[in-house]
Amino acid sequence: MNPLVVFAEYISYIRLEKNYSPRTILEYENDIKEFYSFLEQEGLSDLAAVDYSEARLFVTTLYDKGLSRVTISRKISSIRSLYKFCNVRFGIDDNAFRLLYHPKKEQRLPAFFYEEELEALFSVGDGYSPKSLRNQALLELLYATGIRVSELVSIDLKDIDNELGIVKVMGKGSKERYVPFGSFAMEALESYLSNGRPILMKDKSHRSLFVNLRGDPITARGVRHVLNGMMEEAIIHRKIHPHMLRHSFATHMLSNGADMRTVQELLGHSQLSSTQVYTHITKEHLRKTYMNAHPRA
Image (cartoon, rainbow, N blue to C red; front, side):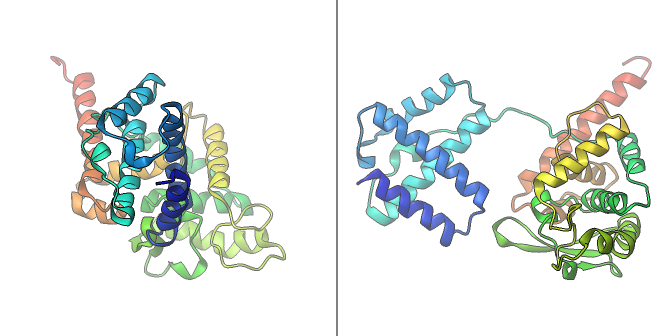
């Protein structure tokens, strides 16, 4: 079976039928292109000719490149998914990658903000200019809800119910969910919508909740720029990524007594195992606090 024909049909399948996000599709494309490059080097021109030994050799080349276990595991999943598609669509044997074991994941705990760091961060955006009102509302909503930045930038005005304190977000796989937020985010949004957004919009006309300084819908890159600027002003010497606010939301919720299932639903995780990583954070924080505070630790 011609690999290029299979590639085109598979990418069309995950885009149109599976409705994967553009970012996920790009990752699959890159992983498969890397696999195809390996096949070319090995002199293989037919996907059906790949057996278990070649699949193992491909994984070995990934380790030789110094890639992390998480990245290698993702690449295995990408190629395994391709072969599963080939098995159903073209009758190609998919045992080669189906029998491969995923490398054991490295136990990396998600980075999060301590509450005193968040207080410093929130104080930076506490101003009255349209930009400050926008930044404060953006920060408050991210921390209050734990939503992803991709979800934040897609929120329209109609998705916010500021009276009930609920926002509708479109999660992964086009799954909608409703997430509550508290009084701090509610107040920040009211100020932004009344005195910030109308000025930033200038002569633009669209329904996106958050806008940049030109009045256009803010992008994920723009959100990162805003947060990095606030970090510098708060003099917090840490590398930030927007997901840290999502991690902080989950960690603080669990630390203060929220149950796992509720946090799972709020985060939009399809699997409970994705949420359970945050219990490791709270346990590690508890252990460090004990070791630092107990006289005979």
